[in-house]
Length: 241
Length: 241
Image: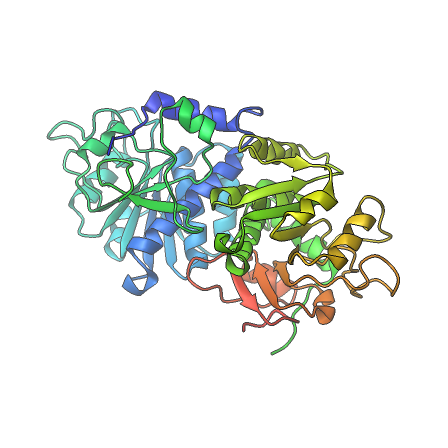
């Protein structure tokens, strides 16, 4: 099974195509809704509410964080008790609306990450996605050090935060060098960093890709089962299990 | 089990609340994406692809038609072959983008409704929703007469088109007087017209309502199972089966 991954540059171009009025016709609202929905389905799959309802969602300032905010909303409707850590809020008005949606559902936003982590059953790492470029800055450097050493299972959205998209984990001694989430959900397509992913489960989300866009970027459209928004794939690739 | 329905006026006010920056924080893009997704899940439930993949989606000029366009997109990803009839296109730029998304998936838009109906396995009636006020105009009067007499099963979105939201089917002799879809999916809450619904199955969609908005309009939050975006309810009400 060939490994179909998409570079950071192509992933950005693909997103641009999806939102191009002619090529894709999607809005960021739509894409983020579907991305966040797929994240919530992956959480439900690996960690159903019976395994513990306290989900801590760590959100970064960009679209990866927005996916986390959407996922948190779906999770509360599934019966979870999500808590959000969102120390550097994105400026896009969409992020503000996603926050409002969570406030209206009484989802707590916390600032003390270590304390919240202690009482969590699962951590969603929605800090950085395919547009990450180091170096890490505070407060995220500390947060990632804690994710590295916690016994709480972690599900990373699109990329284990702190990893370089093309070259994987940072060098020995830096925060994130030993960080390996248990679960990874790649959005639209796996990134080259999956080569270094040694966690247990890998999902693909983003059931909206068209054949022509997949072809343009040399991707294969995965076969999603039934009405699922996610499909489980090889740990290190995008091939179907 | 009490019958919890929402009037046309309250349904409009509720939508406005959902899109209010403070009260709801949703965009129309998000709400329509989730509504159309729930419609697609209801189709999959009552008519899985094994029962026939040819789905004709009849779309009206407003938001009900937009829900149909979104549903058609999800259906093609589920393996169906949707065809869209959209004779009076809505002017909102969102509808144009939803059309583009379908064009990019090679979904045919047809103008000959009777011929398309003949080769369909299921018809989605996404013509009129809770803002419908008669009288019917062409081409929809003819389309509804055909829906009345066809042997193709029909799934109506939010309302059987031609029915008045508060008072149900139009008087004897008018198009729609004898129209009863096999399946109805009520969005957010059932409308008073469900009192006259004698079809087989009734679903509720819209898993994004908050407790405070439900309370404001005297609704009960339904218990959706698992990660489903729909829940099957009493044929004439919103109570859980």
